[in-house]
Amino acid sequence: MKGRLAVLASLALTGCGGSGGFSDGPEGWRAEADVICEDLERTVRGREPALDDRDLERVAVTVQDDVKTAAGDLRALDIPDEDRKRAEPFLKDVEKVERTVATVRDQARDPDALELTADEARLLALERAEHAEAAGLRRCGKPETGVAAVDAFLMPGYARAAALAVARVL
Image (cartoon, rainbow, N blue to C red; front, side, top):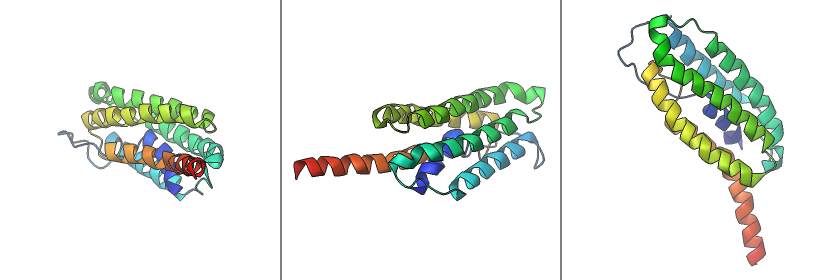
């Protein structure tokens, strides 16, 4: 169930892009953004996981706070004007992630609605990866992390649905 926590962070920001020829060095805004993404992932993974699919709402509320803080930190970065155009799509993705995490929180008790949100989140993870790479980010936006996290997040729900289906057959 620990993967359920990771999904919200991964939806949020974690992953890698590419260097894209950028040279802002280890102290630049890209390095700061990557640290924010890495810290968010570490924080969320370190939290107590949901006990079961019914405990998801508690976890979602906690992770939503973590995501909100990281998103604010990302928006507060001093991005030079010459980089702003390339960073803007990723920053818009961060806003989408915040909305997605809020939706997950609201849908925690509705598995059907949550499944639709998960499909949207998978697509967002792929889009975010492209935007992160275009911005020159290495840690933020890694697609395999985002998609895998969404799947891990839903796994307990799948397991429960499968168990109920088997119980009906037996």
